[in-house]
Length: 186
Ligand code: ADP
Image (cartoon, rainbow, N blue to C red; front, top):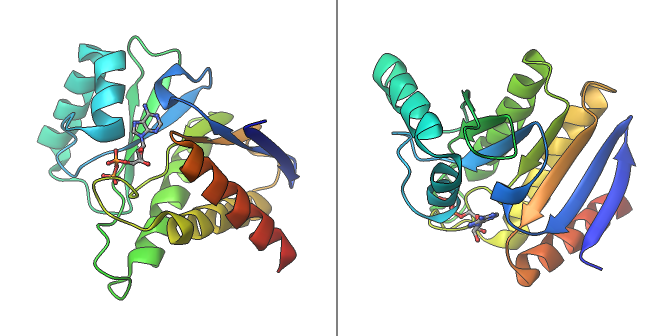
């Protein structure tokens, strides 16, 4: 079955294959661009499903704060999504691995989880940030993502009820499952 479930410091960690726009969680994470415009990929899908409430709230933040730096996160309402909120974060563009990509990717995951905790959000779903248009190789991204989430949960025990990774393709799901199993062995 395309679902894996673990427990980490009082939080459920779940890997599933699916579409993030359909998830019934309090907040879904968007792999946004720095201008917070809809664009393509998962961001286009989230803006489409969420509707103008999401796109207009994102545009307002862009106008007030300027471009969102890589690794940071902001919150908008979820509009027509089943999720109440969207957390928009900007992952790093892959340049070969020697330009701080791993640290920036980990920071993006941490920023989203911190923002969720600050807003009392208990259930969060992530897509595979940076592994589409931004070109981050999935096996490396999966390892960084899962480690960042695990470390955050250990440092913030019981603050979140569930963190879910929603992987769009069977291949991505398999990579994340393997990365989780490897992380548990070391
Ligand atoms: P980035 O620019 O951060 O690389 P992309 O949107 O191009 O972001 O891709 C990130 C990941 O999101 C890819 O693995 C892509 O397959 C996946 N994705 C695209 N649409 C969806 C969706 N509706 N739900 C979940 N994941 C999705």
